[in-house]
Length: 325
Image 1 (cartoon, helix red, strand yellow):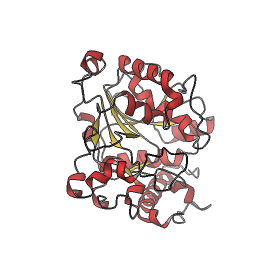
Image 2 (cartoon, rainbow, N blue to C red):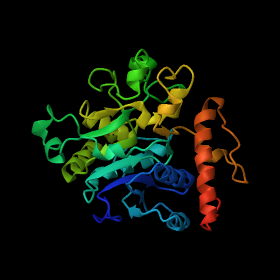
Image 3 (cartoon, rainbow, N blue to C red):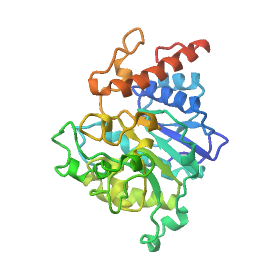
């Protein structure tokens, strides 16, 4: 949990978790993209003690506000040796604890904003006093908002659950209604066979009571949670979350041929999410220029990031910042 103080004047914030310096280029270009599209709300970097001093210096040079949080891990967790990134993901539950803010929109550092998303700051959610009361579980259906996970497993990773198949994917249910998919998410109660959310973007009204429920659920069941934070939230609040349309958390794999390109529209994507490796910044050469994607299917989406990144670094050089990040 953070220290309970605000690090910015606004009571509504975007947050991004940073646990190491590998994601700094993503963080900086995400911040640039929010500002490029006229966001009225600040991005706060939530950092853990695993972040080195050099990373703090780079963040401070760019004037990005930051806030310390505890590195969150369950006492008895799952072995994520196949996907070590999931050890860090528990800390993405922290926004539920940030009660010094009335609204938190959590973003992953490997995201890029392509259109203004400030409407998420006023998206109707249940009052935490209502959603945290066990007596209201049958009527409180708007605890938080997020986009669906894609459970197609297009890379056929063997350690993923066997029921992660296109036939069980919420996005598959929208292939025949692509226009609807641009503004309406699949209903997690009827259109989502697994009812699974993706943790890359979360819209949260922080609450001590909700956070206590989350921690309790984590301690009791973490060993059985394949995908850390998103497994927990999908299970604890099953069918009680607001499903955003894919455009707010457009997983880059949705665009791949044969995955969910049936619903993808380049011009409608508001936030693209660069899941899986390599990240776009890993494809920059020693001179800082983008060399193109490792996977040809990523050419368009990774090019978007490269263009924003080049703009961001040019603007930083004008301000005297040229640290190679």
